[in-house]
Image (cartoon, rainbow, N blue to C red; front, side, top):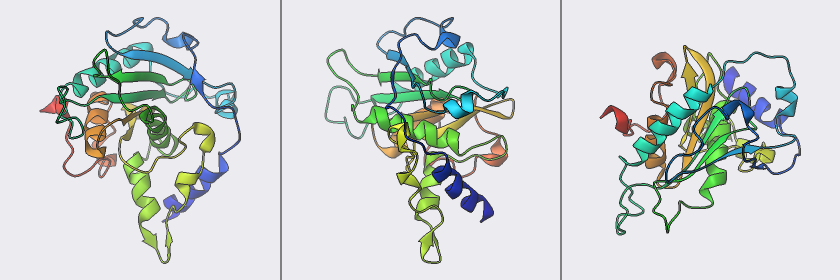
Length: 245
């Protein structure tokens, strides 16, 4: 109970007004050693002049994703997208999902790596509105997880709905952190990333049904999974990692 109260306070307290985040080309210098592009994937680096500046100016040496980690996760995402069937596109020639994906490093959350239109044909795209949602899912999973706790966007959503007396434990949390674009997203598709038992980032996926979003997110997180003892309930009961099949 104390954890939910703390999270509700935290979600409200960190909100501050700032400019809308925008794509930053190659401003993410720490990733410049990675591949320039992935065929068929529109990848960019998002940044904001103010978002989380209060955190990034602090002298913390947070565990985070390395450039090689970003490349591995990108490859996982692309492979996973090609393995997940799409209920939204079943009548079309493209029967697998097409996704907007955001990889958010822990140390630099205002410099996410955006994987746009993964799985799309040259004359198509993923849902444009899903870009903001994917970023919100990644922010939600990263913003409310820690080395000791795992809270996916699905779990935050559950806490926002489960009644505590007459009031949800985290009722209204989805209306906070609006400087993050989509802010806090309260349905599945955002999961935290771990390395050597430490939180290093998060991934957010949007573009199809919630279970399909979560399946691709699990694929992205292959080899960056949270410790098993912390990951119960992170995704839906019927959702599995397509890379583990």
